Image (cartoon, rainbow, N blue to C red; front, side, top):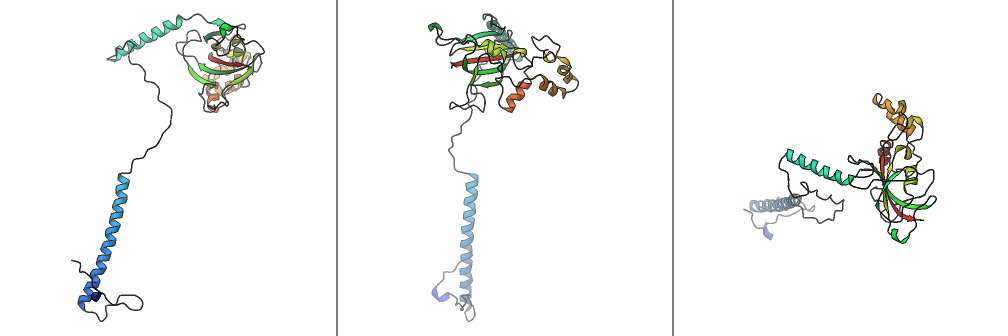
Amino acid sequence: ALLPLSNSLVAPQNNAGVVSTRGTSSSSRVACVCAMDRTAFLKQAQATAAAAGIIAFGLNPPSAHALVKGVAPPPKKKVGDGTGKKCSNVEECQEMAERAAAEQEAELRALPPPLVAAKGTRYRDIEVGTNVNDGAKAVKDGDRVSIGYKVLKLGKRSYDGISGEGTVVFSRGYGLEDDEDSKGGDTDFEFDVGNLNIIGALNDGIVGMQEGGIRRISVLPQMGWEKPIKACDGGPGGSGSGGELKTDYVIVPTATMVATETCFDNSKLPFPKSYAESRRMAQRFDQSLLMEIRLNKIL
């Protein structure tokens, strides 16, 4: 047990402040040792309590409140064929999926056939202009216009090259790209209709649109980003065989890059701005593409 200290039991100190036990009785020396043990015990207990507090804080940290912003999850897809019935096995699920796909294809085929522009570009109006009944001005050759657009790879069920949904290759004005300014900066594309630097399908397909309208046009390679030379004219609607550069990649994989550099016309507008978009476009420029146009304004 620890002994209480009194003034009479405190050991004398020398001039250096060091406790001296010379000339003290045995009981005084015992009291001094007990006092030192008590001090050490208190220091040890204090250190142990502090360490226990740190460990407890690490194991049970206080709850934090943070506002995390991100992209909202996509809406949940409906299960079944739209009738509320759910499939119970693989065969039934496959049958229901095929039935839904057939119904969707039937709806697409029921749409009116695409119209054809002056130079052969096929198109379909998704939404007409806001002032179509008021005799509003329509786009004509030579007008300067501001548009938003999406260039898409055709979907599997796009039987006419215009209907259905496809994968976006690149876009402007729809807020799909990282470099678009949501505060009203680089969110549209302006050009003069008929400018030779613009792809032919856009020059041809936009004529007749009114402000606020949305139109889909079919972009054949020859009316898009493919150079108009015989060696490259082997894709859909083309008159050539494609040339050796077009087919060498089957044997020599690196020849694909040569064909792209030879046939891909990156001077035609609109054109991707980012590297990722350019790479996607380099893989699709020789295919039939779909372009959705939203006419913002006739300037």
